[in-house]
Amino acid sequence: MQLAKRLYERPMSLPEHILDRGLSNTGDVLRLRHLFQKLEAGQPINIVVIGGSITCGGNTNTPQQIWVNLVFDWLNATWPHPGHKFRNSCKPATPSMLFSFCLHNSVPDDTDLLFMEFTVNDNMGIDRERGGGLPGLPVMENEWRRGFERMLRLAYQLPSQPAMFYLHTYQPEYEQHSFWQGGESQLEILLEYYGIPAVSARNALYHLEIGRSDGFADEQVHCGVHPNPLGHIYYADIVIAALQDIAFHTLTKVSHHMHKDLFRSLTSLPAPMLEDNYESNNDCVKDGALKDAAVMGQTQGWEWVDEGKPGQPSKWGWRTLEPLQSIVIETPSTMSSLAGYQGDTLLGIGYLESFNHMGQFSVECISGCQCEGLQSRDTNWGVSTSVYLTAYLVVSQSPHCQLKITSLQNTSSDGHKIKFDTIIVATSMTARWAAQFNALRV
Image (tube, helix red, strand yellow):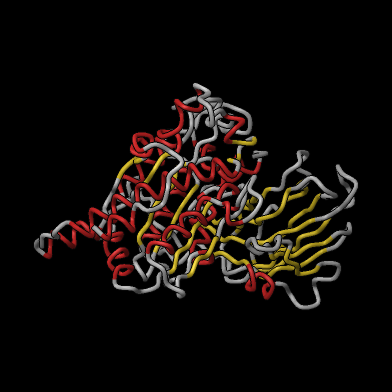
């Protein structure tokens, strides 16, 4: 039939039985059914993706080689429309926790389809000791998993009620070539709880990669923790194969009506799976809002710059290249809107760590809120890559709060560059966890 021909016309690089292995769960397809019906009716859709450096195109040569761009190409070829829009809101080296604070800054309210990819970056939430990890974490009940669930809950409640789809990426070297030691199984439990369809590169490719089958050996598919263009093709194949089958099933199967109360119970947001893990009143300041948050006359030696590469997402932020330069930022209110809130309030400063000419900075609260501050944070990463990390401060609740960020004279490199791009106010994490997180060199 014509529908099947359109859906399955794209040639695949992986055989069908491998693609079938990649399906983790089909979840609740009601939102995807609505999406595919909209496409069949000839209407344009808005597609957004959030994730880490893999989704930003690590080890690809052009944006067209990134897995999600290949998926968008398939969607546009199957349901062509000049009005389709695509936005890549990835951020390298970023766990889902950041998006539990800043989702609305990255995902517009009119999104129709939201792709997500965090499995590699969220491996910090596993309960085992390894380089950079936190040993002795309680299984599931830790801030990485709680942040992932809060992100899903926020996405679930977007005004446009977008269809959601999750890709579990897998990097053998990063996972010590183990099938089970990563965080995928824990994330998958949360995805299944919320009925979000998901596919797994690990499930599809593990035995081929470990067995070093031709075209699947680690060095043929990955470079370090990132897939190369061939790896991105494999990821795209796994995602597209699942979408093809779901689309064919939902568009050809007769839909049986159910009692409206049962329908409402199946489509409403359930209570959190993790205890009391409700989305809280976090705030996130970035992009133009961060530019405007700088106190007038208190930015000497700093400049507002975009360091993004052509064809890739913008990387706006405040930057200085000289030591002993201070900037004052007016943060959102640190007052909790939760009645009787007795927990901690944290301020997060999202900053760049890199390997060229990077310096050290300090942070202090100078007006309104009170905090112990941060005496020194070294942003020299020491390896040939750039990542975005977050430093957290415990602050008092106050309707008014000003931070002073200063580049220091001390440096472990040949330069003093400091750049930050996000300020977060969070009432969903503990001071103890923030202290542990600040000690990490992820």
